[in-house]
Image (tube, rainbow, N blue to C red; front, side, top):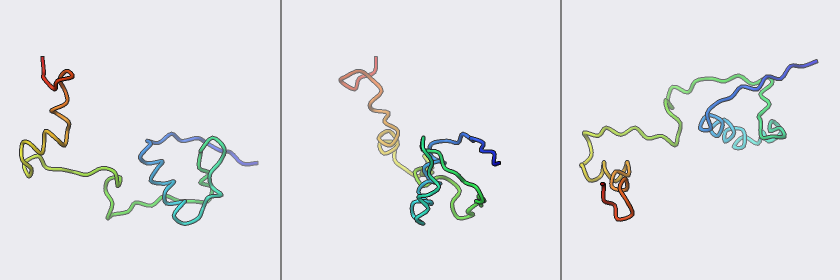
Length: 85
């Protein structure tokens, strides 16, 4: 008999793990319901990858005010005319 425990992780973590399995042709680990069976698989830290690939760290001091506002969508916080009330 085998026990299967469902561990909930962030969507970013799940997507990163799933991408690694797909990249190495481990499609057999995907179960119905989109879970991943990780029996016999160990997770290891990658010292060269601190954050998920979709996240970029930006120092606000290194970019212009206009670029900062655009990056964080600060000009789109108002009404339909992009005017704050």
